[in-house]
Length: 275
Image (cartoon, rainbow, N blue to C red; front, side):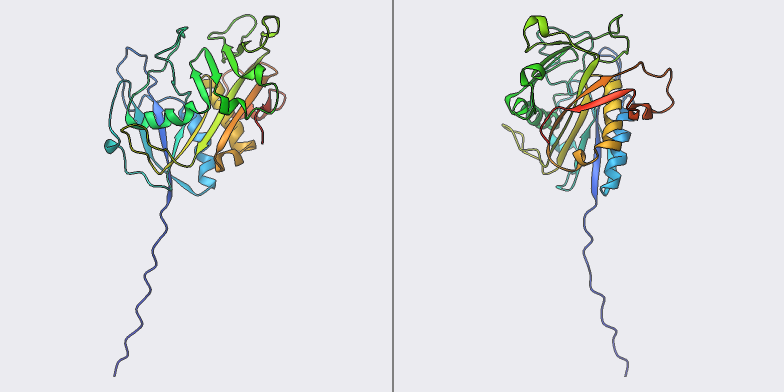
């Protein structure tokens, strides 16, 4: 008489953790916007390498077209284990800017962007290419000199006093007028949230958000290269980080990789928030 082999236990496999690239169009505002015209792809790659070490797999790209008011149902199905990754300065107030910057990013105004902006507005109350103002929650996170860092104005183009081609600080607007002049530095930010609560008629999402950016493309790439190699722990937990990038010398001409950013003789990093 044959005996039956015991059936194998069916063990459910854990859901893989996925990260999704959120991107804005790199096309000019009046140009035709296409899926392949994305911003800050190299900066995203730096963070993606960090996330791979944390067990995340790449999901796909979610493109924020200008004036594209899509509902959440048009998005890929997102899980609590997923992470949305933004490596572009968010255009929180580009449309409403009091002092119109020369370079703008057109917001999408879709439902996902609304959820993301709601989280970022907790920390940044005003953000264009030219100005940034911290909200009280972020101001309270500063380790020192909150008046110096709470409100900043940036150069928008290179000049004799700021030749690097990045968004160098022009003024510390919270200081007395005679003390406002900036040095050869800029700022960068990293924010992570574990979920996206709903607002008004837009339901929340269980996935997390990671936004890591400077005020322009070059500083965003430099910052995310530094995060990957020196501060990967920032990526792993919820919180808000603000850093000063102090440039000690000119960029190398036509660098083949962004790894020049790791040279301490080139850039000094000052973490401005409490750790």
